[in-house]
Length: 248
Image (cartoon, rainbow, N blue to C red; front, top):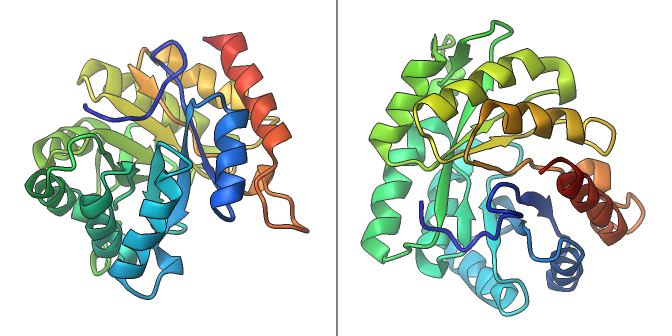
């Protein structure tokens, strides 16, 4: 996996949102560079608008994570197109669009951008939902073993498993199994996402560390965003980094 994401001790980075370039720069500094700053593709009317914004963002923030927005499958194509033209470091995809993103980014020479793919908890340890795409998400659930899902993602050229929505610690036992299989099948990275906050961050991170996954990038969004300003709070990012340093 080639990516310009910086990982603390080559293991952990934090994925956070930012309201704007200024806020993103502050968050980046607060994380000491061990982060990918999220920019959601659903805020742009066109791919071209997104490309311009991410290019401006990267002048202040070296690593950008082009996101979908709450796992929105309608944004997969747009996110991949933006990432292909900006080589931001990280791009989010749903399960069914990971292969397209991998092919497109390779064709565009975006070699430093890691691609994740979204699989979802089912309430049953060892089983995950993979029909997270635009059309498939409207059909009856496609539930497969974690082993099969991760093997399929590797077939498609994805570099990371995004496990969402976790509901905080609600899906902790499922995460533990997904992380174990990631380590066994040598999937380079795992990204637990959904309901992660300052209180449960260490618990969730430790599960992934203990499983032996090479790289871990928890997504921490709403819990560290100031509700009045809409900015991600740099002081809370510093607290997250302290927790990372405590565990790694």
